[in-house]
Image (cartoon, rainbow, N blue to C red; front, side, top):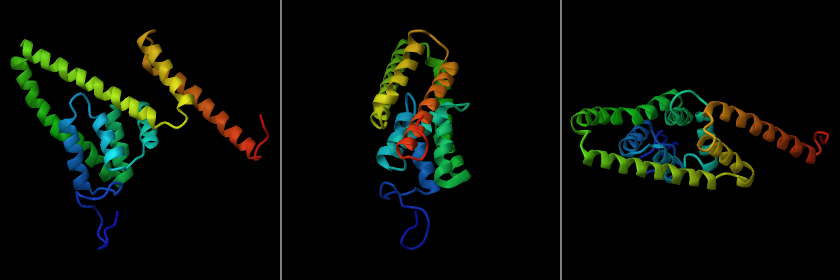
Length: 205
């Protein structure tokens, strides 16, 4: 976002909603990468939606849903999409690098330490605690995403269906997602036709 002096970029203290510069974006994503024990998705959502307001809740949900259908890590796909939206190709590279470089260096060191002391009971207990905290963060993020959905009564049943199919029926994820994609696409098409019909632009089905 342009500054009053005509220069592009913003300072670290810029107001929420202002587009951060490349360096600021890299540093923010690096902090998220280093502090995202159990996964960075909750912290990334907090930064994008609640702290800087670069996306609103429904936009984040839609973008993450798209990224879940793409090959590779959901978070990395999301980083590429958000970075490209803010600064094009350079933004995609900067956001992805910010999320990966510092955690990669840290994990290489931790992997070496785990090879030495990973068998100790205290280390195993610590890792179980971190895993539980990560699961709690993901659960809290899921609740926030559900609260940001428009017409939750219509779409949340699909989340329940896929949860039951995976956890209870042990069905594989890819065909489930493709099936639900077909159903929701049909629902969206039917609602669009109905809206046009009510507006008098197309005959009622």
